[in-house]
Image (cartoon, rainbow, N blue to C red; front, side):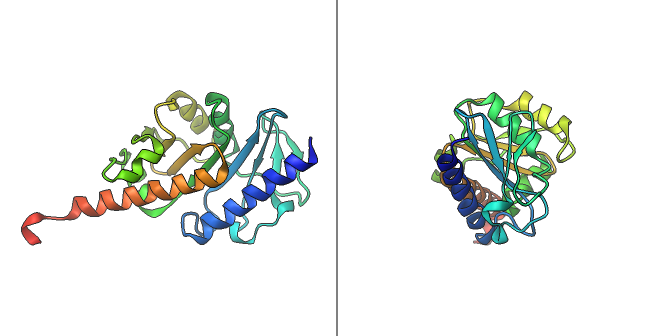
Length: 200
């Protein structure tokens, strides 16, 4: 592995991980993020059980496309959702980063198994479309298989029924921003659906 590229990707992932937790989209050790180096065929993913706000570079885990660990300085367990991340990378060659959140408003739609309607312009940043993936136990091969079956180039956002949201993109900083847009659109969609014009 090219050490300069590896370090750069780790630094980008670390910064994005802290950003998404401190902005409230991955609370209490939930959610996970990853980046990929397609040329050298490895994935860097956040570990299980550690607050993203407290992560250091050595906490990040490097795996191959089959989930085998290649580099793990602090001997952490990679996120249990690694199979789901691998499914995204294997089925979308244009994707270079994946963010999985349990953000409040987007997850409310996931609990009901509903797509998030593109009610405000921020939805253009993720192609104005979300796709619902049927329930699979978190971290399971079943869920990874359902992601594989439901993934397409039509959308960068997958709603995991009764679970959370996957956002796919290029640079990890852009994918985190996209995740924030998804949550904002979900919030506006939910709040606006509660308004009754007769009460305004």
